[in-house]
Structures are given as structure tokens and as C-alpha cells.
Image (cartoon, rainbow, N blue to C red):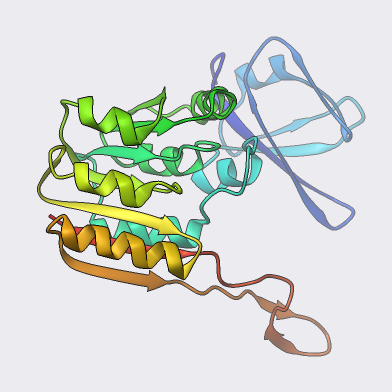
Length: 251
């Protein structure tokens, strides 16, 4: 391994899985399970193990997007993987696509999109969110271009000269952005919106219809984990399945 490679250190302690995302470096990593001399990793490969100063063993893995979802710094509630999966599947996002995104937040969606698409440009109105998102994206070590711009997409979209294959919108002002998307969305391209409430979703659909979009489809994706115990097996009651509504439309 070489300096600045991003790695995931995994272990089990007291029957609980523990994970740490970090970089290969000349510095020590301090954890509650001991201090890890990161110099050891220069002679290691993915799948090898490394030990802390008190003998605790960690397995070395390459982090994937679900790992960044779990461990990235948050500035609010990010879009859930189940909803991100719908967007990727229903837009047919691929390695040749360029994406315009709005409502960057922590940058979680941008990381997922950037792990597939050729280029992602994401707008976030809050400067403090931009700072966190940019750091999270750098930490994800993406090879493709993911650019976070600080600005109000409602105003900025009027001056954008690039064109995109997919547009993703997750903000309170989505319905005001939609009328201006036709000028930047390629023919046959998709727009995908996320909204937590029915009322906002209805406004989004009306705006899409007025803007001339076709094949408008709104989806709610429910998710329930299954609980396994000695007493029996049943759907878990610890997590609410609803998060929001995804609306997909095509130009």
C-alpha cells in the first residue's frame, strides 16, 4: 500500500462490529481499541491484518460507498441508500453521464453519483455544508470529478451553460428550479427529485407537467429490516420504513 490510500479497518469487540475509515500515512491512528502505527500498512495489502499497540487485530479492507454513508460527517439527514438506489436504477445512470445535483448537504448523494457518473456538479446554498461536503468527497477518494459549488440553484441554473444527462434535486425550492431545467438537460435525459411530503411532491409534479416533461412517475420505497432472535424471526420495529418520495421524469 502507498501513502494516502484510503482504507477501512474492521474488527469485532465485545460482539460488536467496529470500523474506522482512515488513510495510510506516517502518523499513528488513535482509537479506543489501541494505537495503530500506520507505518505498518506500507507493507500490507487489502485483506491483511494490522494490530494496535495493545494487540487488537484489525482487518484491512477497501471502503465502498455504503461505508462512507455510515462514517461521513453529517450536516443533516442525508438521502437514504434505498432512495439513492431508486434514482440510479430509474435514470439508468452510467459511466458516461454528467450530473447536475442540488441540495448537496453532506455530499452523500454526490459520492454515490460520483462513483458511477463521469462528472457531477452539485450546488449547496449553505457555506458550512459546502465545506463539510467537499471534505467528505475528498475523503471518499473518487477518481471521477465531483465539484461542489456554493450557490442558490434557483438563480445559478439560469447561467449554467453545460448540459447534463441526469439532474437530481433535493431542496425546498425544487419546483422553482424545474422550469429552467430544460435548457441544461439533454434530450432523453432524466430529472429525479426527492421530497419528504406529499404536498411538496404534488407541486413538483405540477411543475414537471407545465415544463413539458414526460413519463412522470412518483415512487415511495419502503424498507424493513428482519430481526432474528431465539424467540423467533419477524420484521424489525426499530426503524421507520418511509423517508420520502422520489419523482422521476424524462425530457
